[in-house]
Length: 132
Image (cartoon, rainbow, N blue to C red; front, top):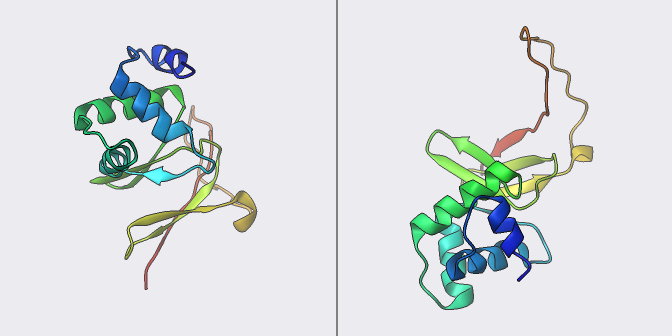
C-alpha cells in the first residue's frame, strides 16, 4: 500500500488502524484542519469503524515530527493540525472554533524588529483570532 513507507519513515508499524488514519488524512482533494478528537470522529464516520484515540494521537504526532502534518497551537489547551504543510496563515474563529486558511498574499509584509542572539527566523505564520 502507498502509506506503508510514510508510516515506517515515521517510526510506526503499518497496522490496519494506522493505514485507515492515512486514508482519511491524505486521500482528500483539499487539505483540512482538525483536532485529534475531530479526526477520530471523521475516521469512525467515514470508515464506519471504531478507532483508538491513543493510536490516532500517536500517529498524528509522529506524522507532525516528520512534517506530514503541521501543528497549529491555538492556546495552551487547544491544538489543531493541518494537512497543508506549506507556510501560510490562519484566521481562527473563536465562536465556531474553526481554522480558516489565509494565503501569504492576504497578509501584508511582516517585519520582525527584535533579534535574539544566536537565532534566526525560520518562518512567520500569523494566527488571527476573530469573533462575532
